Image (cartoon, rainbow, N blue to C red; front, top):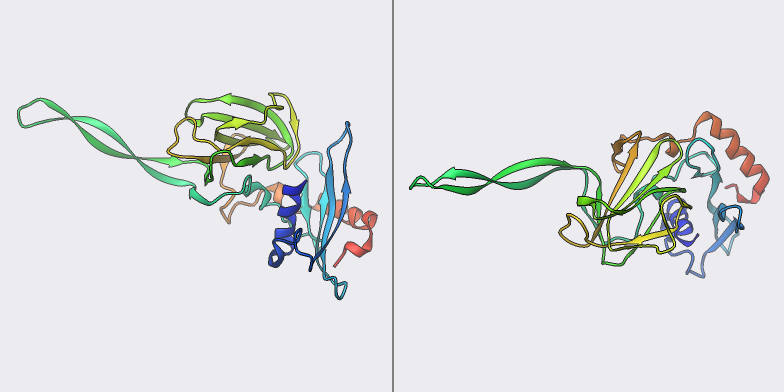
Length: 254
């Protein structure tokens, strides 16, 4: 839950990214720690000024059956995009979506007539986000889902694919290793440590290659035009949010 909580706090109160360690901040939570039958879940969080008791901001979890659940402010603003773009603590994004140049060799005649291989430039589209990070950096599942692939896969190297409700899949590639407790068919919750950064497969250095796909089609989670149904408050979700606010108590509303 720590990864999930940190992500929530950074969104609802970005001025206080270290609220969990700062004694000048109060973080109030409503948490279901789960049991053998269900996952642990943060249901609500708020940042409070200890001097005045003022609530700076708050977030509520909305559970959905047809698509992954999500966190929303009391006003219905989604903070979900951050979860789907931060599967690890990274140094930088070394490569995003776009065209990349690759070299190939083509035989060309030399002065004496013998063929000589010369470089030929070609371009291909890079699908996915490359996060540069040291080997062994933990990687977390961005949402609750089911493991449908765990193993080596050509250029991807060591690869984990998670299937999520709503025909979404996430890909985590070039891993150095996996969480040893996981296997294909396992259900995993958001924030679970599933693997570790590496450089297996077609890779020039340690990084995580991350992909989000909807109905088998790649989606760029960083594109401002990308507005997935799981990131937005649907009409059917509004009632669920109101229900959560009422059940969890008015002190959590700004």
